[in-house]
Length: 129
Image (cartoon, rainbow, N blue to C red):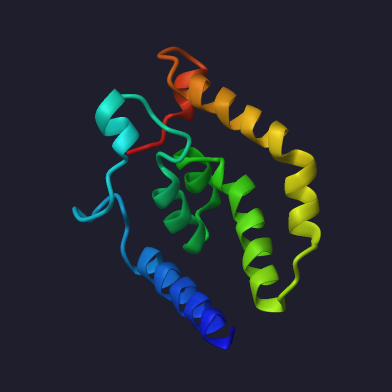
């Protein structure tokens, strides 16, 4: 159990450091969205890597322009990581997920459809380059 916590801590630190030091907009080995590659449409996560990089540098407005879903996703991720470290199985994270899961998925579906509409104001949801 301790090794899982150590692995989680190391992965969290390494991934965070990676996105702090390397801007996904400027590196060529950054993962490419397979959904966008195949369909030509933006998925709900497109721009998320850039948004995370901008948050780490305190550029919240730019992060919002890249993908505002990260402001919804990150608190859930932080709660989940906290639960993993505290060995809690029934916490605020699970209560939130249980009660909000369908609202959350409906919102993501609507966001995905809206960000692919090619006219104002929906084209503002497409991440900046």
